[in-house]
Amino acid sequence: MAITDAIIQYRRFIKRRNYSPHTIRNYMHTLRQFILWVDVPIEQVTHRILLSYIDHLLDRRLSPKTINCHLDSIRGFYNYLIHEERVAMVHPIKRGYTLRLSRPLPRYLRDEQIVRLFAVIKKYRDRAMFMLMLRCGLRVEEVANLALAALDLRRLQFIVYEGKGRKDRIVYLSRDALQALVDYLRVRPSSRVRKVFLVEKGIHKGTGISVRGIQKRMEYYAKKAGLKVSCHQLRHTMATQLLNADADLVTIQDLLGHSRIKTTQRYCKVSNLKVQRDYHKAIGEVMQRHGL
Image (cartoon, rainbow, N blue to C red; front, side):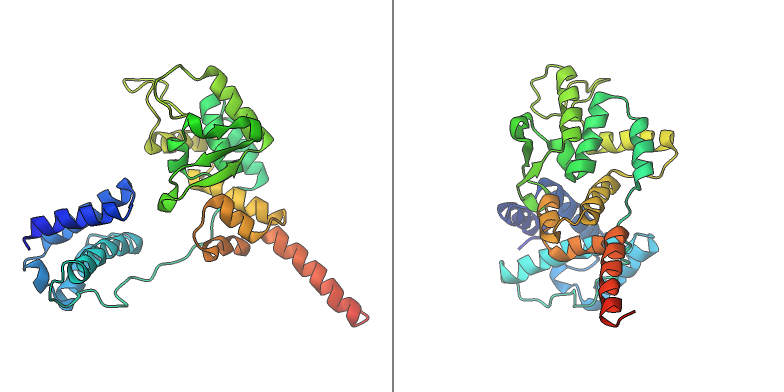
């Protein structure tokens, strides 16, 4: 099979498996970089050549996470060639080639930082966007893609369609998030675009705001408030606050749309108030049993 045909067929294969358009673009982009770099036929790539490619990516000062993304797309392509197209070859990526990643604890905002941030957010649209991240745990992509038809304000909930991993989930609205959303919808310009949040100025006025557009608004407000804040930190903050309020871990997993409980468990390490309460409660019982 010619390499061009193989890539086209592979793209169709992952599209049929319901990969998101974003994932497909990333896979095709990283795969193209590898094919342009390698100087032998794709079926003749050896373990040694693959290790040289990893060294090449390291020389480009790419992060371990980015390099692992490259390896994922290459691994998927070779899996397709071997198992779907039945190409007789040795898989060039061995177990253990993936780079080890540091696992920093999720960063979240303290109560006083939340107050400082939202004190400078005056625009109805921006306040609603960031309140959905803080109170509902939405990812920035989910805010950008949120549709009017998904809202059920009377029942204080809405549906996130095709979140990460192409999964749908129901999300609930707090009273302050509802108020922020209603305030914005009252002044939202009339538009044929069915996305909730629209661009308000410039040549793209009236179209749905992009992920980068939302991130730039956060950068603006973070600088204005004198804070280091990202959109994703608002989601981390929501999870940490719920855990500190003794919400069940499985409940938080469902609300955030995590596939694995292990991802949600990372918040236990930063939920200091809950750990503190659990410690004093448990140690109090221990002391009582020993008559201390």
